[in-house]
Image (cartoon, rainbow, N blue to C red; front, side):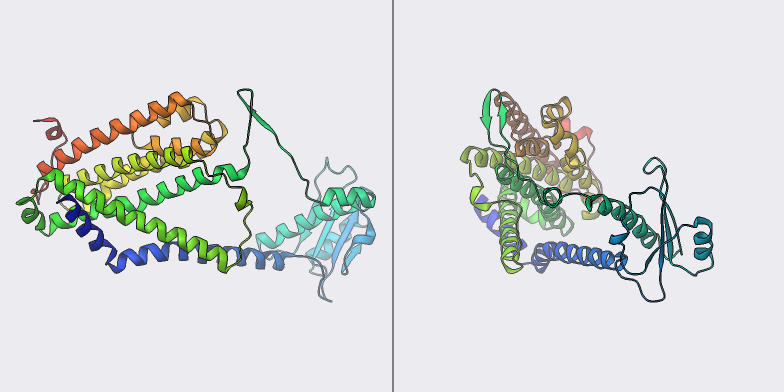
Length: 397
């Protein structure tokens, strides 16, 4: 009977247009936004480049520092030696901008006077003035020094941990990093499916018919399995779309795919963490959906659980900077937020053996507790269509 419910739940979701829209539009929107952002940035850079000026434009430059090399000035830039007169030309609109390098550079600020067009356009003069000084200094270097300065340095890094040499290259973090991304998708998409499944059946009064022939435990397990299959399908589709996008647009990744280390123990551990954490979230969503009378109320309340689950994202800098610190260790054992924290720490490979057992024990305990309250909330609230159940009633026999 559980498999029948799971199959029904699975196909009832994947046959909906909303499932395919949410699955396909999510990466498409990210791609479109990334393209627009990148394109607008490149266009802005072109707009603010100050290489060649129109015939009616000129930028005045006065160098009292003795650093500027006049030979590197582009066409339209004029060296001057009268500061006050140059400022007056900017005020009267005779020149576009005036850059003044003081004698005691860099202790004193470089002064820039320009016609105001926009904040970004004004900042472009700042960058250009800085580049003028840097390029002037570079022009005094030998060809070998310039080549060394402009080339990208290569590094060979060796790391030791507990006296043993360890591989901490970027490729070793790919599999755990994928685990973090998958868990994020499970939480954001899977939670909404679970709460919608329970609340919609409750609002349509179909739950009365279902519970007349099924035990609540059987129904919940069936829903969990069915919706787990839905989210796995969604994850597979997103991975396929990501791979196709990389191939179609010929994206160059900053990693060597051939050097990605597929560690079976890491994959198994990551999978267990993701599975247990998802069950905790799913149980919570079942309980919320059953306890509250309408889908709208349930969705509002469920956001608390979702935010708690992904809360470590806001602390990821602290967690990755000190993966063995007190904050990271405490969060790893916290209800709901523990899974995301431990997955982040797994990315940098800083989980001790004892912590693997304690965090797994914490997640298993959360699964049991959340399942108990989900069953209790379902039994008490599934047939209450106008009122929500009280928190106190969950602890009563």
